[in-house]
Image (cartoon, rainbow, N blue to C red; front, side):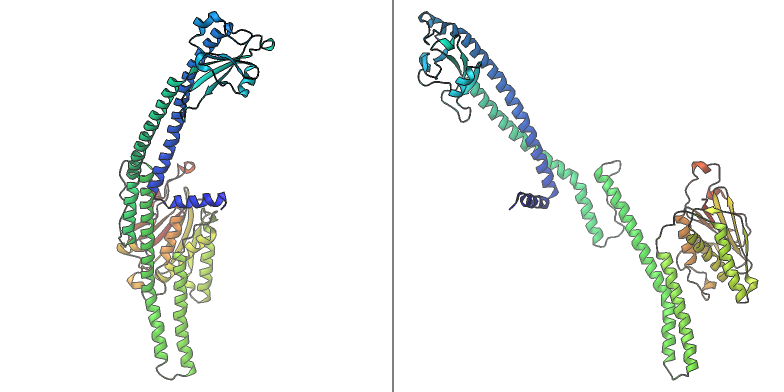
Length: 495
């Protein structure tokens, strides 16, 4: 097994542990490293201080004994009272002991390597280990004797006992180990409690999320007020996500219900026509008549599906802009041409325009104007008038007709999908045009107004004017300048 495979397997095992366990383990490991480094530093400083004291004693002993060492390696007889308490050995160039203090007879304390180093300068070494403990621990200093090249005595080795120094260091190690383990245990317990406390809101969020998964509606995570940390920000974000999801689900549910309701009628008619056509034998002409009726129903279903796709497709407004006046002129010209071709020239649309560049793509603007014209032509009455101009920082489109209009209750719900007046149920259409118009205007940052019989209804939430147009009126400050006829006004940000 390669080291890479071993590390990957270890990471997988660690990742399976609970988050709290991983946090405590990481915290404890970090504290272990910190405590170990701190203990090592304290131990080094204490050892350095004790060794420096012993080194001072060694230097003093070397200076005391050296003058009394004779050329043959012996110590002057009259020096006994001076060096009697010192531990020393006098060695020749091969490391043989020539003379020594009474307790230092025997083998040389200096190794061949130490002897070689001593010829270059004083060398301080430890004899015996701290751990495991040694019976006779010493600290020695080996130095070259004066005139070593011309005499038998070459190296002087003096020693001091390390018993008290080693005892102090062992006691320090024991205290550091006990204190470190105690501190590590305390930090692990405290870290565990802190991790539990920090993760408690997350566990609470998880339990509430489980309730939501189980079917609970309207549930929101309990975020403590007045706090701004990672967990509370997570709770706020999750609550915003839940609201968005619930709105999306409700919107889709409403869309499906409304679509099902609208599709039921044409599908029922289509099924009924097919059943009636199969009840008896019919001529070719009768079959063609039935097929024509079925084709009408199918075309209506296709149109309904197209409208549903337009309304349900959440596409962004294209970047760029267009001249709203030019788009309106093209849409009006197209419908006037159809009116003339079908002999309904009296229902032609009157147009008044001034240049009005707006922050809306040409395709989206054409869809917006087209839906408003179709609504006016289908549900209103001639004359239908269209006016485009610019007021302040807004492009304005106004479509009026002489039809019955809408009452105040219908104005408040006119942009909902499939909303239609009772008098319009027998006419073509699906009640989706104004919903699509509102979506386009709102996404562009504009405002849609529906006015009839002195009642006014506004849709959309346009942003405040930019600094460059601060002197221009906002959309809500643009007044309605029309009579009580059915009027649709669209305000779009100027490009």
